[in-house]
Length: 60
Image (cartoon, helix red, strand yellow):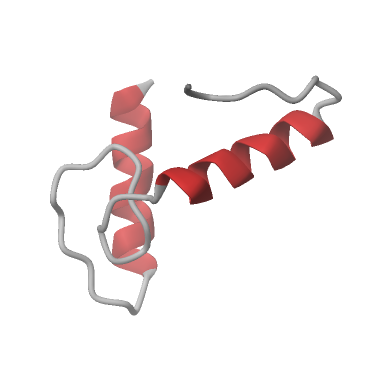
């Protein structure tokens, strides 16, 4: 699964016009910077709501 995601990141990076610095993060923004915890939590909440799942906290 991570190998597939890494290949997808590479594909997106090559298709993007923005500069990308590969720092080895699994979850990074369009420039290669790590995602902020708040951004990740917001995205998770949206996906959970769309899937009809109850809201939970990712971390305490």
